[in-house]
Length: 222
Image 1 (cartoon, rainbow, N blue to C red):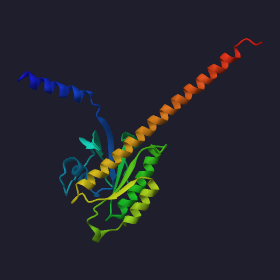
Image 2: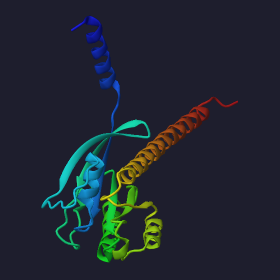
Image 3: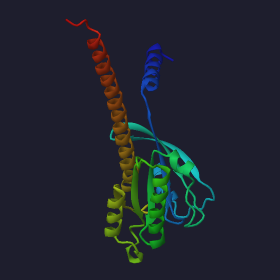
Image 4: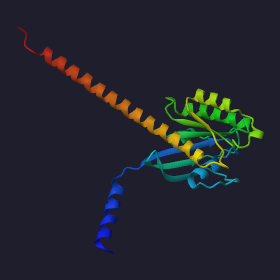
């Protein structure tokens, strides 16, 4: 191998090691049959899998650019056995953010995401974990049971972003659901970092003020 080519390879390797790859953990939750796995696989591979029957949760890792920045997604595809089974508190606390998926053709799945959000509130009392609400199977309008307006109202109640997509026909829109949640996670991290910095600076200011007061009181009086 020519020396020049080896040098170029080495430089690229060094740059790769120095670059900090941001990691974001995303959980996907929804009732059985809403298309959680179809959405996840569509995001990971751009392919659509209509029938995806798995009996346990799956985890994936996927590197992608979000707004020009490399992001390493770690995705947990949950697998409830029925509409009464919710992830454990430990599982809910694992993620940085959650995609709450329901099917527009299934009223029960819409109620499921309500319960999932309540469980998240218990697992995250400070309500700091970002969520995104996604209505899947938007192409099946003739079977619609949940209106778009209802989804928008619920998203407003959750204070989160909302979209209706179809894993069967869309690629970019499905990816954007993951990307938007990622943006929310990164924004939350920045807010938490700034809040911590403000507290630290506030503590230092208080400490300096106290020390100054003590010094002033020690000065000799006329």
